[in-house]
Amino acid sequence: MNINVLLFATLKDLVGTRRLAVSLGDGAAVDDLRSHLAAKHPAAAQAIFQAIAALNEEFAQGEDVLHDGDTVALFPPVSGGSTDRPEIYLLPYEPIDIDALLAQISPSSVGAACVFTGLVRGETSRPGHQRKTARLEYEAYESMALAKMQQVAAEIRTQWPLVVGIAIVQRLGSLDVGQTTVLIACTSPHRDDGCFEAARYGIDRLKQIVPVWKQEIGQDGATWIEGTYIPEDHDRRSNG
Image (cartoon, rainbow, N blue to C red; front, side, top):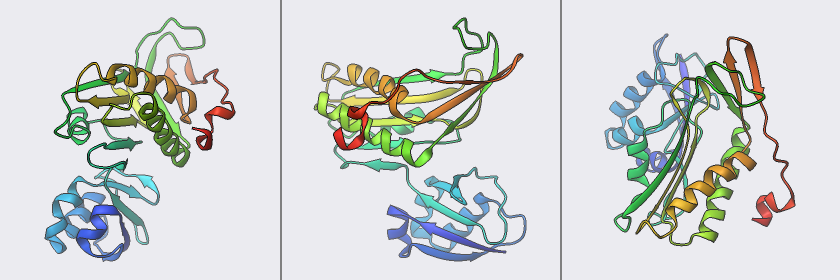
């Protein structure tokens, strides 16, 4: 079968092209494609295995089976800023690797990090929620969500200019009780340079303007949980 491969950022530079046509045997999966590409382009092997994969414009797992005519994109975590002020924005379907993210937003000038993570609750007493939850299903307006994550980071930098690195990650798909749903991490040279306040602001702002929704699945069926914040003109990116 024939697979269309798109390469972005570092991978494009290492391989020397943005598009590849690859032939694989029937039943091959995303990880098989990675191995094939790594063998053909050994200088890019490490980047290929570390890259995020998207199958037909949707985030993909390594075991996802490919079909003739599929398009697979490989790219590093979505990021902005310089290496001295790194930013990462992700909407992954796979578990969050907190240590790896911290390493990416902690250049040598960093001596402090504040990380907020949200978890799937199994029980809650809040009105409008199921009393017992088996799992959550998250979905997002993905292109807008990534843009709004960048807006949150820009607002953080305006208010806390000593913050060095920022990571904003929201899981999508099905998550079981106890799994991490969201992560906001901010790093700075010292603990009193704003990383605590910036991380708190980041999660609060994400809940306001980043278009992500969750559905609670439990003994009473499925319930979409909706917020109450209505964006105003100052929430527009052009005004941020």
